[in-house]
Every structure is written in structure tokens, then in C-alpha cells.
Image 1 (cartoon, one colour):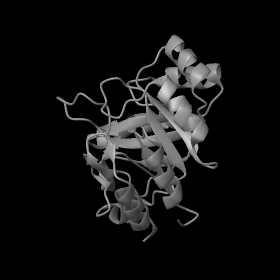
Image 2 (image 1 turned 120 degrees about the horizontal axis):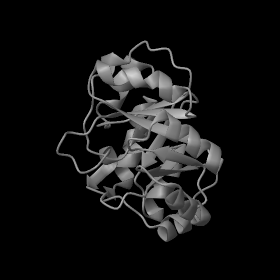
Image 3 (image 1 turned 30 degrees about the vertical axis):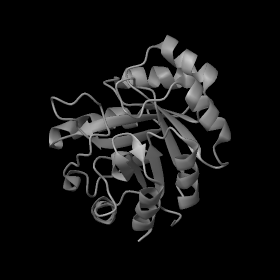
Image 4 (image 1 turned 45 degrees about the horizontal axis):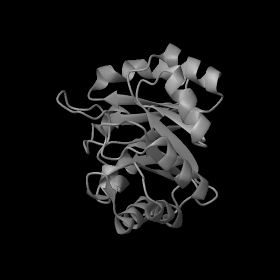
Length: 214
């Protein structure tokens, strides 16, 4: 994979697909700690997978509006490298989590239209990384992983002060266009490499990373 493109495969819950992500050249793997998600794992499952993960993969924990007790319990069990806040956490809460728990924090921001970009400056000031995802539909039960894209033209040419990732409906067929339109250096995906909700496909993982290379 080119040195300037990093891929994160999120929602992993078995060793086979973690190995597939590593073999394909992914830089990050994500564990989902949100019970309603078909990709959710327990702390114990994630701990075993994190310990067995190939060296060099950054292990990211996706959490939704967690309180301090939840994060304490999580980090006492799972050796994570980064916390991904994927709920309605305020910039103040992002800063608080980062200070209290001593890990880099990635904040997910949902985008549907230009008005959603107004909050980016505040989050960039306190987070280590930003993840731009398509805002979930009103009737969605999941905060992410819904397979929807947003208008990438909204962020074309934006000057960023922190590293950022693009997520939301990315597939083998559209990732090249997404990279070209936004100039993104980091890609995050989950449903785009699944054969069914929550079921990752090693072949799709390999194909996606190859498409990102191209």
C-alpha cells in the first residue's frame, strides 16, 4: 500500500479477518463496543483478538457516549491503542476522555450537508484524529456502518489541522473516486467488506485494499 494511504477495517471479531486485514496492508483494526451492532464484541473477545493481532496493527475501540466507568472497565481488559468516540460526545467530553485515559482519541463526525461541517474546528482542537462518516438516517439503529455515503465535494480542498479518516459507504468500486475527490490519506470501512451484516469477507478485504492502492 502506498505510504500516504492508511486503511482501517472496523467491526472485526475473528482472527481470520484480522490476519486478512494485516496481510492486505491495513494499518488499523477496529473493535465495536456497542451492543446493538451486529459487529459488537465483548471485552473478553476483543482482548484475546488484540493480544493475538499481528504486530504493527493499531487497535481502535469504537464506543458510543461512554461514561468513565465503561471506559475504565474496557481499558482494564482490552489493550487498545486508540479510542474512537462515535456518539454525540461534545468537544469538552472528547478533551476529558483524552486527558483522563491517556490514549489518543478519534472523534467521529456525521455529515449530511454543509451545516454539519461547522463543528469540525471545535473537534479538531481537542481530538487527535477526526473521522468523517455519513450521518445515519433518522430511523437508523446504528451510529455508523450503515453503508451510506455523503457528498464528498463538501470537504474537497478543506485545510485540516489534524489527521482525518473518511468513512461511509466506501466500497471497492468507489474508494478511488473518494480518494481523488477529497485528498484523504486515511480510509475507514466496515460494511463495504462484508458478505452479510457483521460478516467480514477476507477476499473483499484484499480487494478493497488493492483498490485503494490503485
